[in-house]
Image (cartoon, rainbow, N blue to C red; front, side):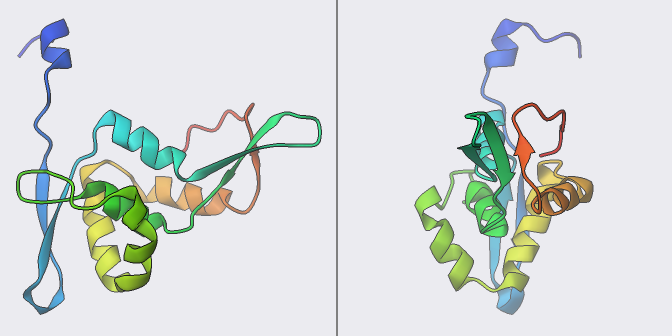
Length: 138
């Protein structure tokens, strides 16, 4: 394999799909996210607002974290998404935390979302972050 040219870089990549076994013989499939999906997922974890001086500030929004990740990655066996963003609140309230954890654990592996990334999200959720921050965390 060598350097990829423009045509290869813009060619639709086949995303990896993994089966996740749940309890009672049930299973689902999760897949890798595209770059755009990853960006949108990460953006969904931030709330943009302006402070008293009119400067942009960003704060973490971890509500429905697991359901957001699951909704972005749950798919059929061919990789077609099963859920839409509007399904997130219902999924979060309807599915057990144990099942959501199984799904999100596999989704994190496939999408290289490390435990450190997740821990940084939780740690940083307690305080605000300004637009001038140097943080590279998810």
